[in-house]
Length: 383
Image 1: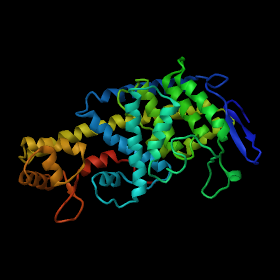
Image 2: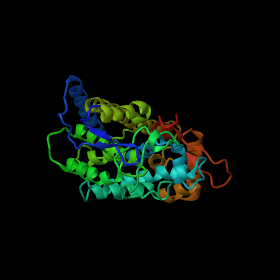
Image 3: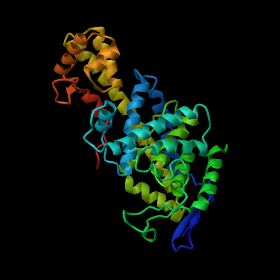
Image 4: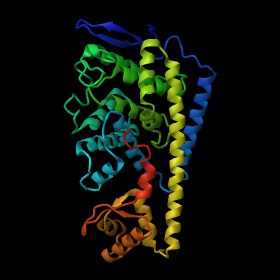
């Protein structure tokens, strides 16, 4: 076995645990033509993604919805069975059709991301911040009792449900090695070097997943780290790159290549996969943003075609891009208009196909902006 990334060690308990070597890899990374090309393309597509925020009508609203998509996909990789509509229903105080506990995991992911981005404007990346974010990620969910916000105090392992530690696919470092390994990772993260940023976060993500420092939530936390790092390094002005769509679609390759790093020291193979993901995900986000700009233009045109041209109607369109599930009361409160005006507006929006009633009630109805949710939720159906 190649020990470039570390080695498996037999523990006194009789299982083999992986002890990672510190980053950067030795011997150094080999930048062949393919790796150079993938890095160049990833940088270019990421810059294009960062630039799209300047042409969006309201980038923060787009980001807020895109964060929900990432939270959903990242949770789905770990087996959560929730949908974007279920999350939106939960946020709209409706009773979702899905398991509320699973939806809570997605909502926590959104809170953890928001908290991390806010904190990074005040403080650098650190182990303490990672633990702080992890606590929010697991709060009130099935992983909450598993030492949330603290590094593991007992051995964890990856394997099929019900497998023993000796049958595990992978056993990360033992608890006594976890803290020194994470401290070394923090030093690498903070070190000023000449490693390209996208390569560096690719290395950091893989190393974090190998250390598996928490008893639960390592996958989600490791994916959050990618976005946090890019915002912290000011490569992205807004948290817009989310790799979970790519990783979900290539789940087997994702796990296989992480394992190949451990067993064969194949850092370059992993980085090629990672950089390809950055490119594809950046392009997908840019395409989605453009579709949303086009949808907003189409909605405004539809109002004009049906002679619905009041300022309140235009403001309701803006509101729907912020809150895609609404009630008449929401419209009254948000637009500061009368109940009669709000009711008439909502009826007109339903008649021309912008809104769809989803509760089936005679009173206290809720309406969905279906076309918008359809664009954002693409790829989130569980497979």
